[in-house]
Image 1 (cartoon, rainbow, N blue to C red):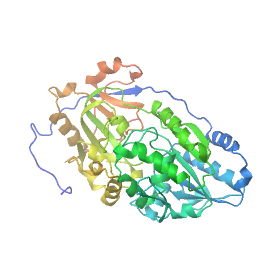
Image 2 (tube, helix red, strand yellow):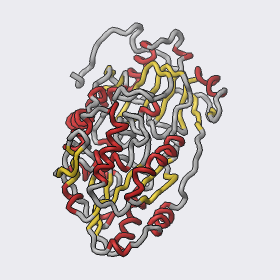
Image 3 (tube, rainbow, N blue to C red):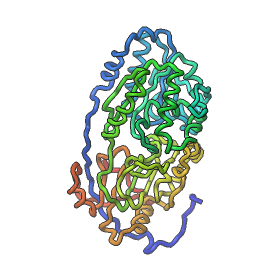
Image 4 (tube, helix red, strand yellow):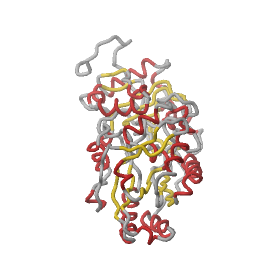
Amino acid sequence: MFDREIKFTLDGGFECELPKMVKVRQHFSRNKLEDIPQRINQELARYPNPERLQGQRLAITVGSRGISGLIPVLQQTIQFLKRHGAIPFIVPSMGSHGSANAEGQTKILATYGITESSMEVPIVSSMEVIEVAQMSDGVSLYLDRVAMEADGIILCNKIKPHADFKGQVESGLLKMLCIGLGNHVGASSLHRYGFHNFHRVIPEAGGRLLEQINVPFAIGLVENAYDELMDIEVVEQADILSLEPKYLEKAKQNIATIKIPDIDVLIIQEIGKNISGEGMDPNVTGRPGSGVSGFTGPNISSTVVLSLTEATHGNGVGIGMADITTRQLVQNLDFSAMYTNAATAGTLATAKIPMVMGNDREAIVFALKTGPIHDIQNAKIVWIKNTLELDNIYVSEGLKDAVESLEGVDCISESIAFEFDESGSLLPWIE
């Protein structure tokens, strides 16, 4: 039905003069690593007794998220392992992502520039798993067969707040171990506990798996609010459980947010799995698909999502958290990838389709005309590129006074009008 116009009655139709927008800069703490190769090599140099790596086949995990600086981190790690006689290779570790098949997961890595050519090691992708341990209630814990057949597993992942639950351990090394490396079978099994139990499930599952496997070391990555690496930690296996909560707290203190507290219409230019596990980060919007409490964000009346990132390969999971979208976005959805992801996670709401408008302009007008707004020219509109890049955003003139009263937020341009092409598509984001 989304290949044709949907006709309905809207008071006054779609003719509407849109408010003008002002570019705004949000300021966040910006500690960052200036020399990533140097830092990872410093961390690796602290590794005790590297001669024990000689002759070991070691699987390095790589997930489905975009991580700043990941390529040099992997390249330097691989060189370190080779210098000490190890035989490293990469294993995609992303649960059900990539449509839950080996080829799809390899393609996701290639999107980030992670290929056999760039890494100079094999990438071995398989969805086969073996049972490795059990939870206290008898539920089986699975790990990737290829990784388990290696002599050891090197966990490498970003540590950050999760998009569906809150706890001392959220998205990071332990989650990659018990869900990412569990492939479709393992991820599906653990997600049946429900996200409201993940604050205890992830630490228990991770701890039980660590008792059964060899992890020569793990690499924890922490980003700042500008999506830049601010910290790299090489952690020995015995320290993973105790140290990951500390890195998570550092990540939480450096997450980017929308500082404007009340918004009539939030326009999100793009969502995708490379942006967040839910396409648009609930830690920014305050809207988790899991329904779990603990998330905060602005008071938003309507959220409009206009497009998918190229790197998400049609997986629009998270679109269900929007109120309004466009026909073009829906036509670009890979329902197989999206439904597989949502079904595995047990967050069906993330894959629901919101109200669908004919183009970007209609979506924005519809949001304005259906919101609690008496004077559209004074509407409180915020336009962001995505939920990762929040230093430069646009706000409507009706928010200028509010912006000027906020600490760490400045208006940096004159008022400009929304611009659309002949098809009604909003012209590309202006940096």
